[in-house]
Amino acid sequence: MSIEENEAALVERAKEDPAAFGLLYQRYVKKIYNYVYYRTGNHHDAEDLTARTFYHALSNLDRYQNRGVPFSAWLYRIAHNQVANWHRDRSRRKVIALDEVVVASQRKVAPESLIESEEERNALLKAIRQLPSDRQQLLILKFTAGLSNVEIGRVMGRSEGAIKSLYHRTLLALREKLAGEMDVDGEKI
Image (cartoon, rainbow, N blue to C red; front, side, top):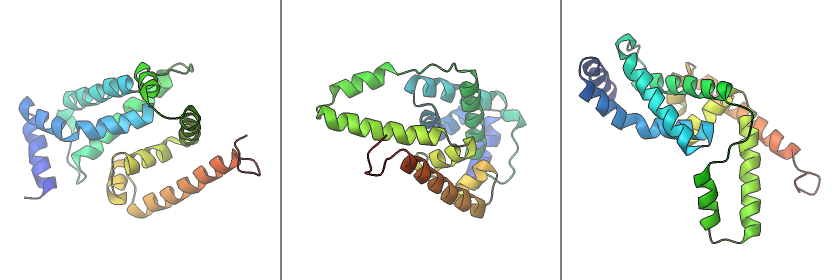
């Protein structure tokens, strides 16, 4: 029995048995959490949205139909919608998670290098967050969830070729955005 067949049987069992849904939860909670975390940048919101994702999945499991794509694709779509709603509902004020401040203050590194790497990280995250939602989703699925182009295509409802093309265009757009923030000497403006 393949992983997909095993998963399909488990999903069908979960429609009647909550303990089976617990197995699905254990299988996917870390992946969904990582996806949500990289979309929000905040551990507390990621935990909350991950919980909402699985609550929504459990509440609507009876409507889930296996259409030849992994169950995880359905979960990623729910998580994507939860994050989109979170962004839409969220106010425009900048929120800095307390745990990030504490972790940064406990590092024993030179302040200059900490500031420089933090500026580079922030520039990259800013550039990524300016990308269209589908490109952000692609990067997160690729680099945080570690999915292949085929798997990303299943989650996003696109072909492998379309994902490769979108990935290439996304990297070029990021390079342009980041290069545009540098002056002639390579210094940040």
